[in-house]
Image 1: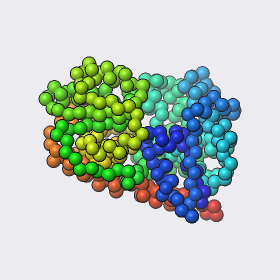
Image 2: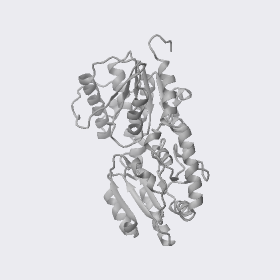
Image 3: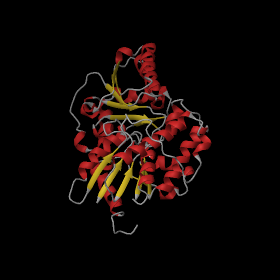
Length: 378
């Protein structure tokens, strides 16, 4: 069976999709399966000239927005690049970004399309202060979900929480499939270590939606309580300079290490003690599963798909977003009690191995893919 995994970002891009799909390809390497990957290179911008028409709404009523114009041009570019580069026939296409799915269906209308939605672009833009909730950009982006439902043979997402989020924007929310991201167990190996000072780590893009400002304020509170720690920030983004200034203003700059972008953080994540990310929104939060597989204690927020991974007090700790004192209290618990920290990390590791292994996800996907095998009735 010939499969195509249609991505938007290249495989080396950090994030849940790129941390899964290239490794998923290895699990399908056999005489029965042939899987290719396709994505839009970053250098391809402003090439497409295709007329864009959607079946379920008129996008041109939002067309004066620069955000909408950029989205439509990127869609045109994806179509242009696909037509230029694709010369192979497939039995099934699995898309992992709305633009990828819509472009593939436009070019290959007769090939079955599975569309997985991994995150909410509009929520990220709202939380990062780029667009306004209820504004024309928001209206445009949520309208895309119904268009995807219309174009796809099966619509899927990565968490129950995100499926519930999508429900108001599509016609058949009861038909959304849910398969969480999977992670190659071989890449995440807990390493015995003994840090005399607790080592906190977060791996994230540095944007307001990730709540790193709240984390810094919580860390300042920890310092005022007399607790020692080191906070490692792995990732980059437009908020970095602002966050570095905030760390200085709060008096925690000496306890905070900014690494910038790192391609394979899983290689040294096991040497830390506590993973913390106080996101304001997450569809799934792949990095929590990665940290769990590295056997770290988890501290996160009660938003999106994070509570589906963390059961408070069992395999991690949950707090409300933007509650810096609650976050400081949670961190204090795991900093001051190594035994409790170990219990949480071990429980997180057990759950992640069971639910988020790439082997399990690959087997679930194979069952779905086989329903679209040529000669099989849908």
